Length: 283
Ligand code: ADP
Image (spheres, protein in one colour):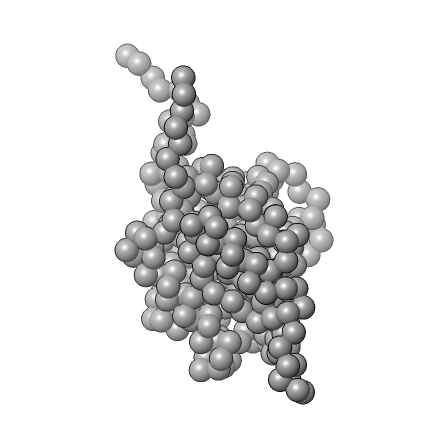
């Protein structure tokens, strides 16, 4: 009788298992912090919900969970059984974050294994139930958490958020390379803080440059999903726990987020996401 090597078998099982009741899982990633990844994840999730999709969002940013604040949520999730938690819910989106479960500073010192265990639990021991799409807000960078996601869940694809300038794009490139390495389709690149329109004089200023992410996407053959401007309303509503897509769904910014959500959904449903090119292996 031949037995398959335990590590390979475990990997195959976890890949195949998926998440019960969840149709698609997508990751939102960025190469570095502070580019607006969580703000974008939150508004995209609300965009999916606005399209009538049953939506959840998981805050996998263990070292800096910001979804409780973005969604204006406090308190602890309800326990449904010995090993099952009920996600919180706001604006029609199911939300789970390590920020609901541990004191703000305690996760900061966790090592890789603890981070992996926490993310795995939040994926598998939360009653996500019946969802069309689960958005996972990944921590910035290309470390353990991202690789865990890639190995634990069959991701429909990854969205990369970047600001337009070179320094942020260099980091975004690392993120793209990481997903390509583990064969996860890239759903596209979003340029956040793309330009600033002065509310007093209407003059547009490209504070962090403009168009860098579009050029990067074009040169790599990756879909460019759109630009989100640097805007005080986006910042204020986020900090207030009233994200712009929830409070002003017909406004100019919300319409952009919803449009991007629609394009992502279409790409997932039609299988049109960018796949890494086949590799030629010379033996
Ligand atoms: P990250 O998740 O990449 O670390 P956040 O989403 O936490 O970044 O955003 C960092 C800060 O930038 C927050 O204060 C947020 O409100 C602000 N921010 C994000 N995107 C925009 C935007 N398009 N316009 C204005 N402020 C933004």
